[in-house]
Every structure is written in structure tokens, then in C-alpha cells.
Amino acid sequence: MNTALYLIPVTLGDTPWEKVIPQHNREIVKNIKHFIVESRKEAVRFLVKFDKEIDIDSLDFKELNEHTDLKEITDYLKPLEKGESMGIISDAGCPCVADPGSEIVKMAHKKNLEVIPLVGPSSILLSVMASGFSGQSFAFNGYLPAKPNERTSKLKQLENRVYKEDQTQIFIEAPYRNQKMFESIVQTLRPDSRLCIACGITTENEFIKTKTIAEWKKAGFPKIEKTPSIFLIYK
Image (cartoon, rainbow, N blue to C red):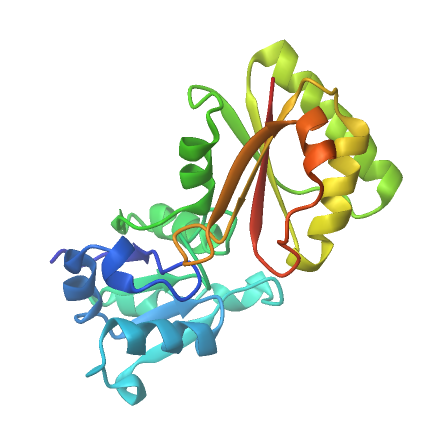
């Protein structure tokens, strides 16, 4: 095992780790004592599920999320600089992909420290795979504006990119706003444009459907009010 900053994917929802994460990752994690995490509570929850014999009290956790002052993270990599491997854990999926962590990785590269990404589930890539849309060119746009007029304008902009650049456009929304997002999409986009909704990927309640906007209007809003979802649009 190299001394490095390991980017550690976690499960999506309550999916058993054996279903989506290699045993190799577990062996790596067993040898790490210092973690940079999105939230300590969720990291501990994952680690205990990952290894029931893990001694949580012996581990060091530092949080990095939207509330963290980046001026406070300058010493986060000290253990790695002293020769001890470290790990980054997000609340769900892959670190640094629509999740915190990139500032630490950037810092590690500046310090010439090794960075090693581990294999695990990414809802964004899995949704592209299952959508039937272009996997040659796609863009992840994060969250769209919450204000209706701004959201409508952004959706039109993304749809234009679909047709002009032949590029799949991907975005997410807070689960409690899924219905409003769905309504904005079907009211804004062309009837023949296609929308894929991918929810609860890898979980027991996984839902992945691709339809034209016209077909979605007839089908209506799927029951995904409380489920983390990925929205993809294409021609």
C-alpha cells in the first residue's frame, strides 16, 4: 500500500457495500487512521458498515463541507506529509465529483503528494450509462437555479447545447424540489427532446426511465419526491 491520499467512494443509500465496492478498498481503508470527511456522522456510519471491527475512537476526522472555511484546511494534510496515508470520504458516491474534496486534492498535488482514486459507484456516470444518451460528450451542471425564471432560462440554454454540441446535459436537484424541477423541464423543453430521470441508483428502489418530453407529460411525475435524482437531457 503506497503512502497516499486515497479518494474513497461510499455506497449510495443503504446499498450493501459488497454490491458496489471492491474488497481491495476495504483492505486499504483498514490501514488508514486519518480521514477528511464531508460529515463525521456519515463517515462513521459507512466505516462501521464497511468493517464491523473498526476502532472508531482510534481514528482522526476532519470535516470539509460547504460550511468549512478554506483557510482552516491548510494543515489537514500534515499526517500525509509525515508519512501516514489519509482518506477522503463524501457522504455518498465519489469524493470530489459533485462533492467536497477537490481543494484538498489540489493541495496534495501542490505539495507533490501522491493521490490515488479508488473504484466505487458514481451516480453521475451510472446514469449516463443507463440513459441511452451520448456518452462521448456530456456535461455535469450541478444544481440549476432555484428561481423559476432563472431555472427556465438555464434549461433552455442546456437544451440548446444538446442540439448545437451533440452533448448530454446532466444536473441534479434537492429531493424535495424534484417535482418542481420535473414540471419546469416538461413545460420548457421541446416535445421531442428526451429526458432521463435516474433515482436511487444501486438501491432497492432504483428508478431509471428515459422518455421524450411529450411522453413524460402524458406519464406524469414519477414518485421520486424524497429520492436523490439525476436529470439528463438529450435530443
